[in-house]
Length: 132
Image 1: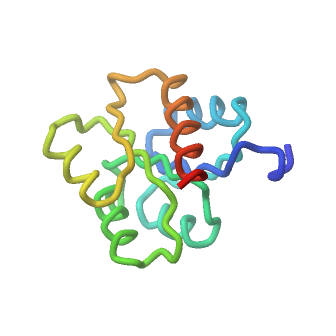
Image 2: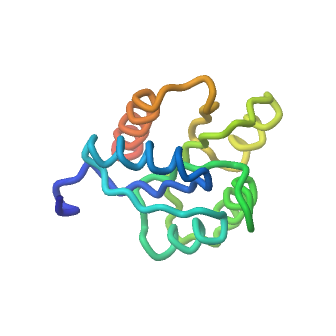
């Protein structure tokens, strides 16, 4: 599928291989181009080099965690930061508040959400971002 015909380019920053494959397959079947990163450093590099339309970001990753990725984006280390949806096992109100304060547009707890809901949230966020 050529990039022009996709719904958008998604960076999937997730170190869990099973979840990365499952989410990647579902997003590809939904019509997205999917780029993957398995740690925070790789995620930042790919945000800069690939210019994704949206980042689906895990918080607990090696090298740099998701909070560090968000902080670097907020500090302007990414020229045009894309919207970020956090998808994490961390479900405490303090974690959600911290991620949103660092610029996350949405926060989903892995154990509370189905993959199809993640795809719907991505579509909604991309639509919102394109109209703002």
